[in-house]
Image (cartoon, rainbow, N blue to C red; front, side, top):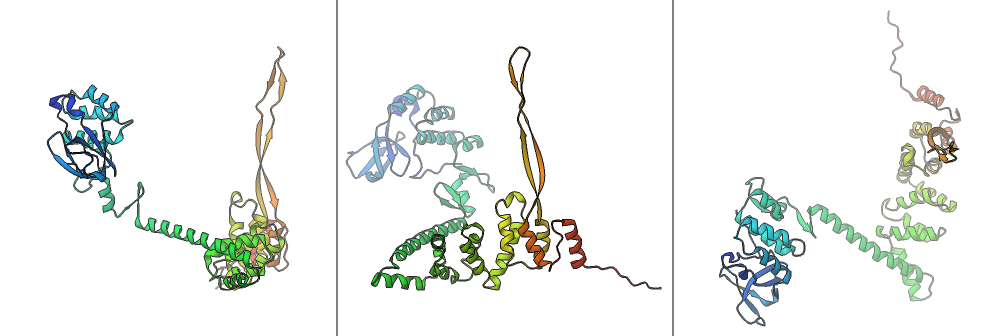
Length: 399
């Protein structure tokens, strides 16, 4: 096994340990792209090409533009003075690595690489970091290579799938385009009442606007201008049902009754939008109570204009629901025989109380064509079973 050390990795040459600690105090040349080279500079530091002789005699030629020449730092020198007189062993480099790791992580990693060179055990490879045992050969190879074999790509400091990155890029592109068109709409909206070329250009812009990315901004403007026929027409003519979510949200969230009625009217215009609205409101009524707080009665009310007999079962379950109420009883205060005060911790009780929903009942009665069992769900279920249940009972009596 061997370490492949490129220019972007840390280069640490085997120091002349037998010559004593003095040989450790070589110059340190920091790579601008990351990492260090240690050795002795042989030529003028102002040269365009640096010639660096490592302690094992190898001469490296590196462009001066890729390096910055730094003398060895006193803190590093102190560590080498304490440990550098020992033999060149894996244990020594492990000690140096631990001593350097807090403040000089790159140099510490270089010593961990030397540990692996001297003792290439699985434990040392794992401690080195950035390497992984190949599942096929069991050889330790760079994690980068393993990830590339899996089809992953580098995204900053993380690895990700190309598909995930493509989705993120598309989302970022859409976000940018949405912001750009929002700024354009803001500008043209201000110019719309202007006379002359600006007003004419703004009117032309809105006349041709049918980009779905404009929907969030148009929704924002509609909430501020609920009577604007222009904004309503722009949203309703968006391709397909791209803007239907706007009217669904308005029908559930707006406190403006006029805007609420407008949203319901738009949703009722086509068979497709009516079906989408029906399923949307029915889904809210079908959720557990904890997931529909503040929406239940509004959805039941909105459903009245879209409901058909498919909603009967859901409405029977919705006319009366159970609400959990927690009642806390305060602790009692008492006086002990020695005159001291004491207070109990109190207790709490949970109560389940029925809650009736008139809007759901009104919709149910309408679908039941006048039948009205009020909030008696048992009778409603019995009625539904008799009216819509299928019987496979064979009543013929063969002799």
